[in-house]
Amino acid sequence: MQNLLRFLAVYYHFLIFVVLELLALSALVNFNNYHQSRYFAAVNNITGTIYQWQNDVTGYFNLRSENQILMQENLELRERDSVLNYASTRNDSVGVKDTTGRLLYSYRTAKVINNSIYKRRNYFTINKGTSQGVRRNMGVITPDGIAGKIVDVGGNYALAMSVLHEEFVITPKIGERTIYGGMRWLGEDPTELKIDKVSGHIPLASGDSVYTTSYSHFFPEGILIGTVSRVQATNANYQELWVELSNDIGQLSDVYVVENHYIEEILELEEGAENERD
Amino acid sequence: MSGIRWIGFFFTSLALVLLQVLVIDQIGISRFIHPQIYFLALLGLPVNMKHWVTYVVAFALGITVDVFVNTPGLHAFVCTLMAFSRYIYLSNFADKDWIASNVRPTLSNTDVLSYLLYSGIFSLLFHFFFFALENLSFAHFDEILLSTLYSSSISVLLILLIQFTFSPRESNE
Image (tube, rainbow over all chains, first blue to last red; front, side, top):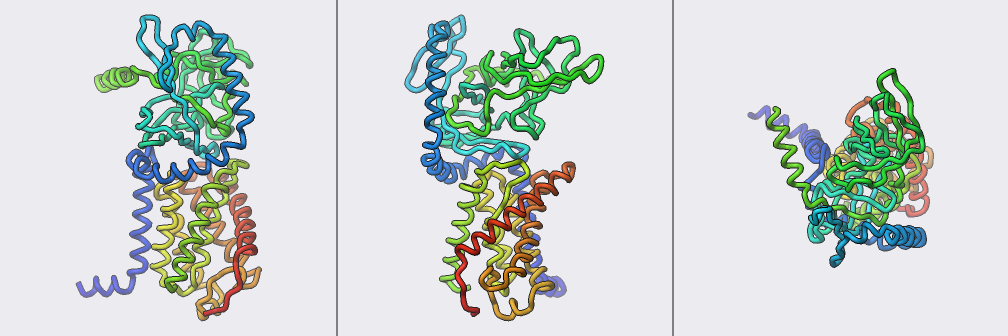
């Protein structure tokens, strides 16, 4: 015991160092791997407010281009009569019904207040949270295409996993043909996604538009993802496919949060099926 | 450090952290360039401050940055490690006059060359540990080295700039 005390008296500096490092390391491992849930909810109100202040100032810088995008989108919406016929306008959200009259998707507007594209796992923060009805597993899109999905929600802010995240996988379609294999970001060029193994018999050409399918529960079917930029045959059976994103993720500002009203039911069913298999 | 000094340190650190997360982190030049400058607050701590105090200060500083950039533990870990290496550096390699005179290692208190060496070493160390830990593997070792090299060179430039601009010449206590 005395030896222990003497040891502590001599080395307590070093022990404090080790304890602090262990603390930091456990935080690192516990909170960072995936969605940092509890942590984000606890601090987002403070940092979110500060980022909001910053955004209040920097938001003015791209008003001109934002305006142009809005004008363009208004025009497109006007032209798409069929969509307007099915749209019901509520207070601040617009819903799209499916053919039997069920409300499938609702949209909310939000503003991106913090964003990154140069990490391996990129997230962005939006200024809507549970108080505004934003929940986990909602998609985030812009007029230009898909942007990400909500992984964490606080009172007034939410954290979205960006398309530029190594765990963000999406099944796309080209024309009417669904492309299997899982499209994901490689962690390098922030304008490009890639599908590793596409069956060799599918005819693909650069310039083809790539859209979301009904398989991805976070986005409505037919939202633009990007265009095929390169196709390369790896062997007789497979080809590789690069897709240039239509969205400039680095410039995200005004976004729509897409709510799939049946997402919980769908995920529950799929989870049930998976558990059964195990 | 006296009470006034602590308050001064608190506000300096806060300003550096805000500069880091609101300005520097928002500039995306390349994926290899993420200069960190807020650890300048650690470099300026008095030389003969009890080193366990510097660990705690470093940990707190790192956690503050972590809160902003959503990486709980990452900056805290690297900052604490930095404080520890600073203690090793000061007690073994640094100019003995610094320690004797309780000087704060700032540009105005030393000559440019030894400050360049001091900030350069810690900039390299900081960025290396930062990128290695951020990746949590050495699978992209070449990228870690490149990022370290680019980011720390820019960070040293920024640190010198800040020091030239804001650091008042003070008498040694």
